[in-house]
Length: 416
Image 1 (cartoon, one colour):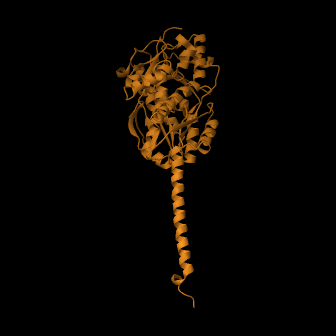
Image 2 (image 1 turned 90 degrees about the vertical axis):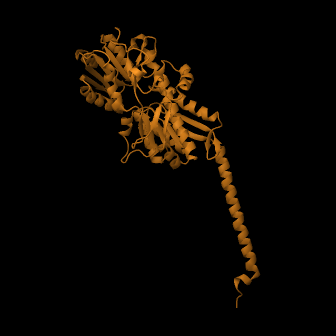
Image 3 (image 1 turned 120 degrees about the horizontal axis):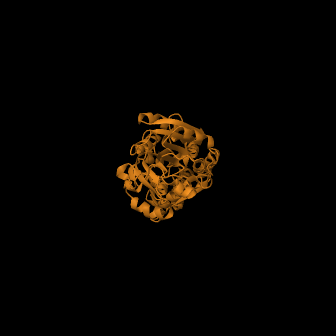
């Protein structure tokens, strides 16, 4: 008859050995966990960025990059971000998409899978931002978009809305009313000629201008619509001229709008007021046209007259590296804010886990140098708008609303 297990000497030894193995394994596991945490603590936090560093949007990209890098340099100068009690440096991994949505998608995928980015920043304009967001949604990685008109970006949201992607910029509905409100400061015939390209924001804003005009006492008497990359605008210009419009509003990429403006000069047509949206929003516009750009205006999303916290810092940090005044500083300010929102969320989450980070981004409710950011149900936050106008000194200054104005509205435009 076999003895009970507890009475067998070999069994006791075996139990002792088994307990020792368990303790050893537990100790090894704890040590491995500690080693992993230590190794993780020593690694930088990788933030993925895709921007059109070359191509028609390269000036915008340079300004945006400046803002991202200023934010990263700022936290790294203090030893990095505090993540769960450990300071970790931030590393921006920036790739060039050349303004090609397909390349943006490839970049976003590589940033997540190869560079192991915990979050994404960018991109510029709706086609690129949407391409980036689609990857972020598929991979479950947070993305903060700072340079895409809100409605154009939201128009591409999947069923149920964006889950991982967050956008703040101007709301096209507000923006497409401001040109008319600016014109209310002067006398005109209230007739408008529109020039819009085929990009998402061109299509959406073109429709919104047509709807807003009659509600605000204006009439769109001509609307030219054309693909991006059009080179001959002569017929559009002649039709606009014959329409008798005092006011021109355009939504075009810089190279196309510059070609349009030069052809307008060659054909001798100059409206009394011209709002050159997107194209007029960097010093590239003035550099290409010089004095011929005097008086052209655009609705912008920031001015130093707004007085948000950090404005003095922004003027000192970005002013010497930009041209044209607020018109360029604004792009760096908004990018700086986007990166700061993300860094604040990492600190708040105490983790770089995507779900925890996404939840922390969702809780954003703070006034930054670009304005107050609090997301709505669609993951969007609209910035207040201001009208800037290129003055004869080669700087774009706020002219509307009056409480933020730093210059008089030039009207009518000076002759060619």
